[in-house]
Image 1 (cartoon, protein in one colour):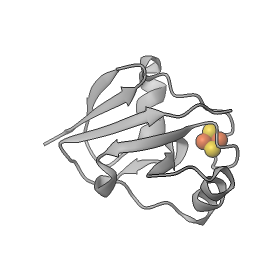
Image 2 (cartoon, helix red, strand yellow; image 1 turned 90 degrees about the vertical axis):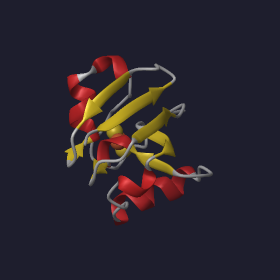
Image 3 (cartoon, helix red, strand yellow; image 1 turned 180 degrees about the vertical axis):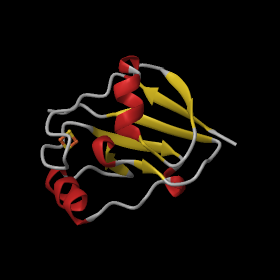
Image 4 (tube, helix red, strand yellow; image 1 turned 180 degrees about the horizontal axis):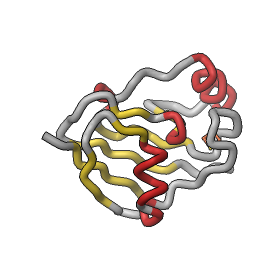
Length: 100
Ligand code: FES
């Protein structure tokens, strides 16, 4: 089994096999169009809303939670630079949030 990963608003889709870091997926596929800056859970540039598949992700660590609290987004928001798909699921659906 593999996982279909879909990114909004680009609409890019690909298949991945868990376990995998999403930053590696997006580095390999620039069309996913996820913006990064620090790549280390500091800046919040890469915030994504998890529309589907959140249960298959490794939960956020303290550093990631601290950044997310600063931005105060509603809903299931994560830092794409920290996302690890722990197990395969039908679909992981992510929506890139406006970094500003
Ligand atoms: S790129 Fe800075 S928090 Fe992800």
